[in-house]
Length: 297
Image (cartoon, rainbow, N blue to C red; front, side, top):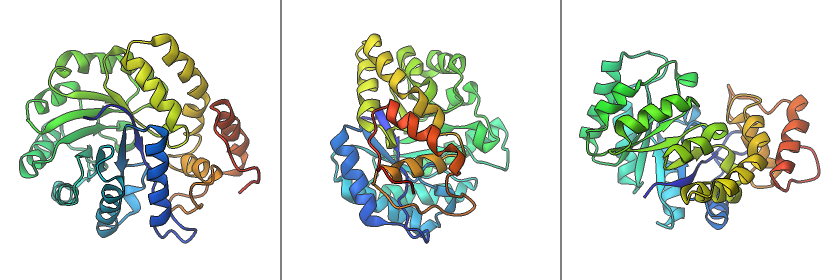
């Protein structure tokens, strides 16, 4: 059910930081038209850390309602409190999300046993399909392959988004538990090699900006057409890099704004994209064939 190019969707905001629901509706239509295979709502790229609980649930509901079962919706519901993660996952289930994406608890640095018990309790409490999310570069918490291996035996834990960019780690995970859960890349720059090794898709920042090309790249990789997949990925390579010139989602929100799809709102402590980087990102967008507005924002 969950495969291919899955966009980690930005959350559109007005200049004052208020969530822009009409723009969110338009973004969803844009992604469906462009061939995106699934939408991840309120993940890291969706500024989950600065949305309060009610906003978080309302955005999930808005995405589910607008998508209307045309493609799968995966709701970001992770938290560094197990109780909060359970409540967010319940919210996602109640509003009709197809699955939840649960980042490892950040900041408090749980042990591997703590990670296992955290995810086990959420899965046993809320019978929604759940995808684990490992991104130690942001969380200071690394879920090791042996812990994923243990969690893969829990029936409604169905996948892992692995965002280390470490292809040896990916191969170990595929060997250990690729027959029990689906594995997804969380790193655009190495996603193609992850897919060719046996991954089922990518939860992508780049797909916000070049959704059709990302979807075509994933489809080519899935059918074994490595030549086409690499040609497409080569066109996206500069974009993969440039979208991390500053902390995600600062660059990607600016890029989507330059495409004319959203306003420039972003919430503190995140700040608008720094002007010295604008030319580099615009050049990467041009290399990927992405049309932009001509005037500077």
